[in-house]
Each structure stands twice: as C-alpha cells, then as structure tokens.
Length: 175
Image (tube, rainbow, N blue to C red; front, side):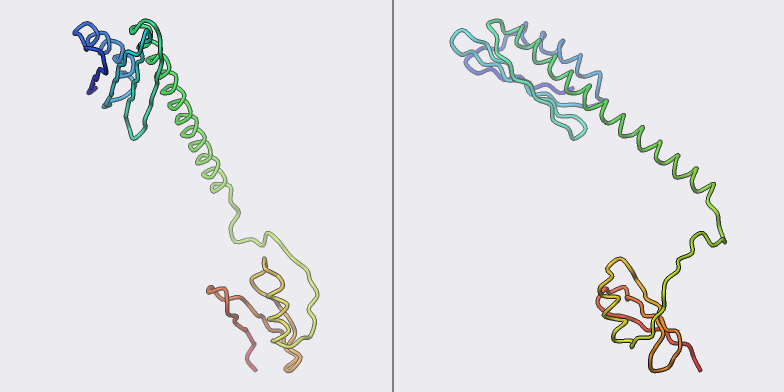
C-alpha cells in the first residue's frame, strides 16, 4: 500500500508515521494494491485525522476529531474497515445472486420443451379492409400482427408491424 501522510499545523514525527503504517496494515489485507492519503490537522485542542483509501476503483474516506491524535486515527481505521467490509459483502452477495440466477437459467434450458405447440389463442376474424386492419393494429401497441379477412378478396390476410416500428407489411395468399 502506498501511503502519503500530510500534516497541517502539525509536524509528522516518525512515531506518528509508523503508527499510521501499522494501522493501515489492517486495511491493506483487503486489497492487492491500494493508495492511502492521510491528512492530520491540529485545531485548538482537537486533533483531526482524515484518511482516504483508493482501491479497485472504489474510494473510502473517514474523518474524525479527538483530543488524542492516535484515538482519531484508530476511529478512522475502524470506520474504513466497516465501509470496506460492507462493500465486499454487498459485492459477494451480488455475485452469489448472479450465479444462482445463472444456475436457474441453465436448469430451465435443460427442461425446455421443443417442437411442441405450447399455447393456443382463439379470436374472432372479421371481414375488414387492409386500411382498417392497419388502424386496428395501431390501436393495439402490444400486438405485432393482426389476422383478418380482406373484404375485397374474401381471403385471410395478415398485417404486421415492420422492425422500423412505423411501417406495416401485408401477407396475402396467392391465387
């Protein structure tokens, strides 16, 4: 883990530096490669520690104030560790759910029935003109085709929506 420590109105001693590196070891175990930025400030009688960790495209940040600098650092580490654990748990749950869904799809594919008629729909075919059939199909947004008897020819025709979504096709039997 790459660590950058900055002190504002406070000198970073070797002891503080070592303490920060030791505590960030708890965070380092969660990632292969991570960068940490630590900013320490002294304002009046309060010590503020801000730790920001960037790893795997995720950013984790904690800011705490305490009278003791070391206590502030400890609180930040606890907060960061909680954020990281929460993110990892969420990610693992998503991966687990995804794998279960994949298994369900595979199981459904194995049990799929092929080459059989699974559904039969019955409806009334009325004699209308192709223009009226087009208007009727436009009024049914969930349907892609309409079977009707052509008034002019007396034969069964099919009008269907083309892929462009604006035009229609007409299927007429020969002879």
